[in-house]
Image (cartoon, rainbow, N blue to C red; front, side, top):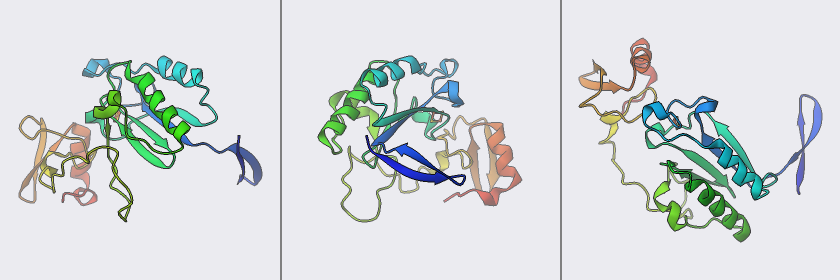
Amino acid sequence: MRTARVRARGEDFRVVRLQGNLFVCSKANGSCCCGWTEKGRAAVNQTLYEAEWERRKLRNQVHLSFTGCLGPCVLGNNALLLLLGRAIWLKDLNDDRLIPAIFDYAQAMLDAGRILPPPLALRVHVYERYLPPPGDSFPPLVEPPEADDGAGLERLDPVCLMDVDPATARYRLEYQGRTISFCAPACKKAFERDPSAYELT
Ligand code: FES
């Protein structure tokens, strides 16, 4: 195990240096969509995540965190695997059989000491959410998502960045000659308070 000496609050502490972290969006930890069966999402089986993590003795390599909203709610249930310096986004995790597959994938990369393409079981669940860093030495793990080139912006709630169908949106307003759609009244109110705080292009 490798540790680092890190200073905080005027004291020195030893922290274990890890190779990654799995963040799982979970209702029990304040998510707004993932794990909400009443919104048509599958429950998040935290017990199984924990059991798979413990069974593989990953504690000193990959931390497991259950979190509130990770952002792309519409794609949930969501998780983010940070491993070997790479962010691997996982979506549509609505089947418990995917949980061991995520740990198998993480374990395979730890064993190989490098990032690997997702296994067949996860191929449709992995996507590139982040823009690549500058430079051209960052091959995508899967085909990058089809770019909208801005054409999809009218579908985005500018406050929470959720995908909202303008045809069925219940909360809308006219602003600078265009119709802005919102997922909920709270977002609409926030926008009305200060439209200049939100990016529309
Ligand atoms: S609630 Fe899970 S990503 Fe937003």
